[in-house]
Image (cartoon, rainbow, N blue to C red):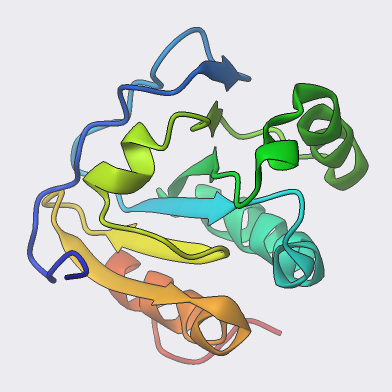
Length: 154
């Protein structure tokens, strides 16, 4: 059963390694948080990555904090060199957990990539979605969680 709305954010402990963070990132309480699951073999992840990063940057000034979790779908996805290549290609600079033992994914009750979990200022789940159709709802839900007007920026 997928994680229910209102559930407190699970721990990010269990990553096999962290990129752009010395260990589990310290998330500020009282801020909206986007947890983004992706995989190197995921075509939709690649198609949406540029926009995910634009959203991360666009709303950072409003208090959005973003963490990416690499969740391998296949054994070859756990090849760190491939993951680092994608990170460099897309210019990903947020904390990135390599969840190659699937501990974080299991705690989030997530089996999809891309998958998006938005936690509100109170630290509870406000929205979750997966795939390209689900991604279309991420920015409006982030704006809502941040208390911003519903209309998208130009």
